[in-house]
Length: 340
Image (cartoon, rainbow, N blue to C red; front, side, top):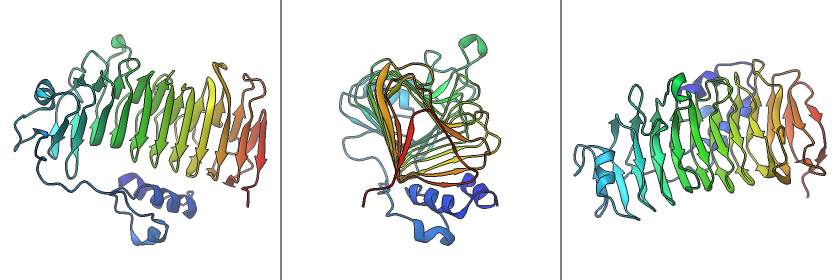
């Protein structure tokens, strides 16, 4: 991956970050022998050639030339499989329980320069239980007159969904969701969040978000990951804030756990808070736990801040390791060793 190569050539990034990133990016990525010992067992790759029997098939060898055409024929609970290639379209997925899956190397949904469905996203999820898998999505841009918040993926309010092996980039928003329950697995979001109101991932008022083995990096201005969910659970994931704002922003509080993984903050970030908790309100009282997380900061003013709007809510750092200048802990924050 090009961004990993850039990191490897940057002497300011410690080897430990490279090793952790490598461990979390083993789902189909070539990492190089220098970091091979840090690799975990890779995620199972989709190697199927050609659409499965019973699937709604999109591509040169399929029954449908476009995803839009396939969706018009799909039934609830079916699987839509897309052959490897670039598909210039923006669609609304309104069939409950549908799985949309790219085959082999994955399909690229490229909506750059075309009208976004309902002026919202490349892929607009409009029914419950949708699964998107093994897709690259990019190019969602809206004009200032249309609020300038085009997203790779967006849901209609309350629609729950799962993202698995999704690569989302080069859009004003990566994921922009409202309500429902969200699952993100083995996915990557980068080069989104083009202003202070757009982000790599922005989850508004959802019931719960669960993230596993994913990467959120290099937002241009916005946050890497912003959650207004009642519950936020993140496992073995990587956050790289170089030019944008916070790596993790939890503006309304909530129950938050971040376990394993790495958080990196560069010198050029626009917000000194690496993590901000309850910066705007305490809509969901709770607390935040970081367990076994490795933090690397190049910012002499880097901080974790509990804004204190949730009375009695504490950010607890358990077995958190750190590299860089002294990290400022602001507000109710306590540190504990990992239990033996």
